[in-house]
Length: 247
Ligand code: ADP
Ligand code: MG
Ligand code: MG
Image 1: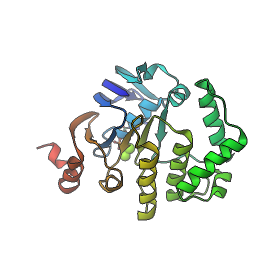
Image 2: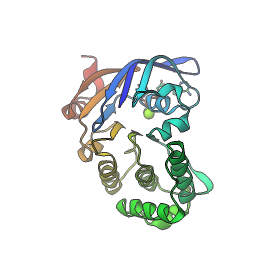
Image 3: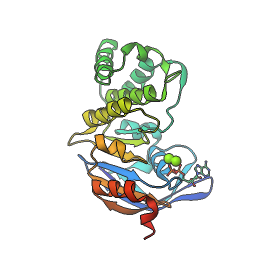
Image 4: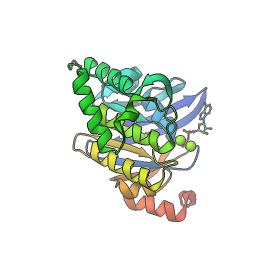
């Protein structure tokens, strides 16, 4: 589904990704761990096509398409979803309005019929219910005044409504209490654990991986994947710290 080969990327002329390779197949969940400043968020932003994150070498294919050639909205329409460490607030635009516009513009780009207001509301209610979020919250402006946990639950509702093929979730577990962590973990499993979907889960901690079992764990350090393994690698890192990488 996703094939990253020797990817290099820079921010403001400074090289951050220094030849990163990674392959993700449909049906797989990959965790990306690594020390602060390693380039984890840069990887997510570069794949998402964020301005100022400039790919300078290597290649990325997503479902056989050259991902780096696509505009950000085309990447989303192709099935790529990015969850951010710090979700944006959008005053004046309700969650429901925002999500219906996002979903329907993606559907139109794929030559699928847009959902009617009624169809969309039914989908939104079902996803909010599944996350234990009051649907009234979806009438409020996007993320404005939401607590950290509410923003992350909201992000899972967004993901459930959009229904992406590949989700890249950057520190979706940061600042969550145990209940929110569990809800988010269950949301990821429910929405994304499927033979035709895949997840890149960027996380500092093992604890989210107690809820979402990764198939593969990779360590990103200084702009490259320096180690890959199974779920046991996350436990090893939790026990030993990133110091073991130097060994
Ligand atoms: P991680 O998510 O692994 O903690 P980041 O991808 O956020 O790491 O950052 C990787 C490196 O890029 C860090 O050294 C950081 O200081 C640098 N960096 C991030 N944003 C910018 C920026 N806007 N300009 C220059 N350097 C940046
Ligand atoms: Mg960081
Ligand atoms: Mg980061």
